[in-house]
Length: 194
Picture 1 (spheres, rainbow, N blue to C red):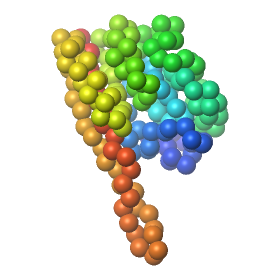
Picture 2: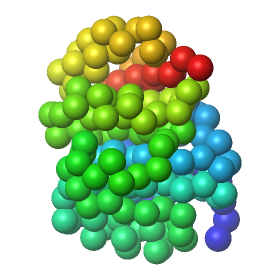
Picture 3: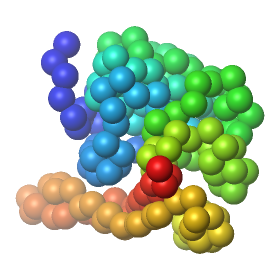
Picture 4: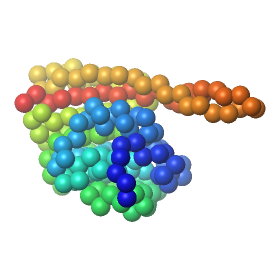
């Protein structure tokens, strides 16, 4: 199978499970700078779109997709098989549960926190390797606020930055071409000090 960054959204089986869209995946993974032999945790993996894209960037490494929803885990398994991502493992738990059994990560992608962002960040901070990166994608202001507050409280350990991406996609409406906006997504990146 051809390996490239930016798998088309329609290649993933989604159903009603949340999925990180192609453009946001690309921005997130560029910021993540995943090592070829890295260990990556994808917390709140959903359909596995980020897990699978990350796995392509670290063919000598391992990606751990952590997901609490049975429906999402079923889709994860199908997408991993369909898109040939054998280096993705699944942990069917609600984070931070289940993280303690995983190897220490080089990168952590957080796409869903279930309202436990501080607990997840506490667990991640105990295990993230020096120079490691955390990427937090959020569509809610509350998660961004709580994550930034946590990062500010841990500024001796981490430096951080953030962007908000607003993607609009071209679609045809009654013979006209229009740009339709997707939900804006905030992307926070924290780098652990060496």
